[in-house]
Image (cartoon, rainbow, N blue to C red):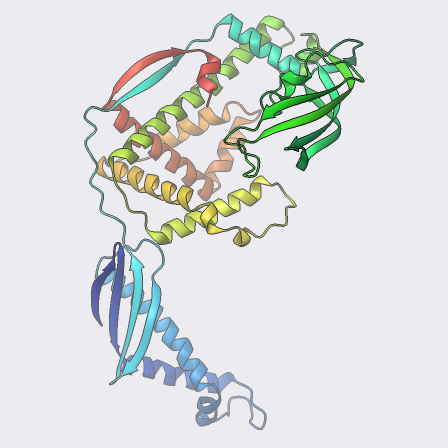
Length: 430
């Protein structure tokens, strides 16, 4: 077997493999003989079909089958011989036979060579959580609002009230699509509507009509409405006052608390707040490190890996619509996901380089410690840990996560970290 490799463009390479045709011809002959022993053809007894008849009827198909198997096997051998680790599956470009030789070419991409920039001078903010009693009380009020009820109020609407409204949105005097609603319930101050909409309803009473002027945000999801000035004709049909539940046994039980005492419940809430904030703080530092690495290291993303990532992003997008959604991921345009996919691939390549250079490993001890801590919030931690150990794919995801965390730590250990005290709500802010 003779192998040659040439650069095509960027990360793309073309491999040409030449093989003697004799071996393939011998395999074809043998497979035709084997087929003659078991094939059934009218006019011949089983096992007595002449080889010439089988060759005439099935020879071309058998040869194509053997050719495909030979090419795939030889491609694997050639990649191993040349110590090539392609980025994505190589594609067979051409196949030809001449002068007792089979020659085929395969096109593939290689992984980019990455030389990490020095971490010297790197500097990041390291948030330090400070939870006050006021933070906990604010969280308790937020939990109460989740269970709030509303009672009819014979007065003008104010913040936290729930109003029932009919409205029609207009731009330049013309109603626009999806800009109207009837019997819509809205909690004032919830931020559910665009800026200015909820404020415009404050002070209105049941039966009152009002036209308010608002402007759609520049980053609004609808291209047709971005930055547009609009008017909404609003009729309030009902005003209801918010009633918060008591902090009692029933309330604590609704949130799965282990205790029925207020002070103990507060401690449980505080513990959960610390856990949530810690995760958010870790994510922010990780994102800052990744952004710095991306800025300081230029990495070409192999198109094959980017295409694979586009496929995963399409699947994720469909899953976000929920079960029962009849959307074929392949119908979504690639351009919607291309930039995000390319970024993901580049980040993955950079993380892998940090891991490789620093010879990082996800040890059994680290995996066990992570799973033990993660499972502690569940009712049956042992079963959760067992689930991961009995599912190799899930376990590999944990190992990948630990390797990524280790890579981030390598960077932060070499960097200057500026401690910044933050409240819980600052910590979880995007």
